[in-house]
Image 1 (cartoon, rainbow, N blue to C red):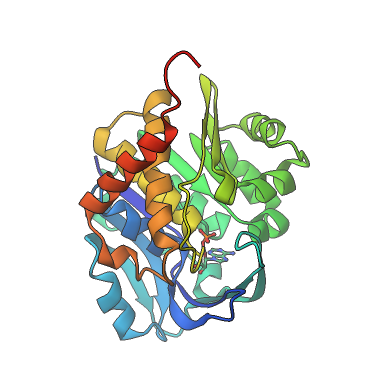
Image 2 (cartoon, rainbow, N blue to C red):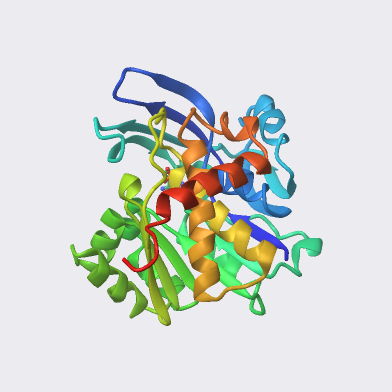
Amino acid sequence: MSLIVTGSVGIDTVETPDGQRADDVLGGSSIYFAAGASFFTKVRLVAAVGEDFPEHFHEQFNRFDVCTDGLEKREGSKTFRWHGRYHENMNDRDTLAVELNVLGEALPPVPEHYKDSQYVFLANTHPAGQLALREQFPQSKLVVADTMDLWIETEPGLLKDLLTKIDGFVLNDSEAKQLTGESNVVKAADAVLAMGPTFVVVKKGEHGAILRHKEGTGVLPAFPSDQVVDPTGAGDSFASGMMGYLSAVDDVSVDSIKRAMAYGTVVASYTIEKFSTDRLSEIDRSHIDERLETFGSHLDIGAGI
Ligand code: AMP
């Protein structure tokens, strides 16, 4: 089934605690998402960049099987920029600088041939853009959104409106706390459910993720990784494996979402092994399936326990 995404396309600068940094690399929530989901299905991208968007980023991104007919290069505008620095634990991070630029402008038009999209992912971006895309797909089968601290802080009204119009919401534990005021992750998830969606996935970095669905609950650890170079894009990659799998199997049951979360975990575990989309561009679907099997064997706690 067809999968569509909108979100940020950015020029990122990332610093990690071991002194490594990557300056002006390809980033943005919809880039990580589309790259990761392309291992499962054909993804359609709706996003805008400015006239400063480097040509070699197109080459880097063309490695992935993504339809970019909805990617607009807007004359007179500048590309979204983000500069982040990770703490020693490689989980928390500070945003040192953010320039919204084209992200604060209107969403580009959705190409006519995208209109039959059944699975919609509203990756982290200005909630006005998320709402604008959502409203164009009233008949879709599954709409899931992500967000970030900046939007919870600056656009709480739009976000609350968005929450009444989606099926699923993914966010990390600190964002869940910020949004709901609850520090217990399960209570926070339930408070999010009370705002509208049918399910919520709260990600807890290296501690995995919790699914709270109106019809059930699931828990999943993270893939045990000893090669964390840059966690940027882990959240978007998690969502990419999850949505990519769901749209490929066309099944949105609780059990299917749990399996989808395992795929999401595996895609994220690859993303963090290098800066930008560098690691994702080295792998193919067989790597994902192989690691899913390893992950499955880690999860096997035996019958009768
Ligand atoms: P993640 O690590 O999954 O949260 O996603 C990181 C990506 O989100 C980076 O590549 C950034 O360019 C992008 N990003 C950072 N801040 C924002 C924001 N406020 N809105 C949209 N995208 C953002």
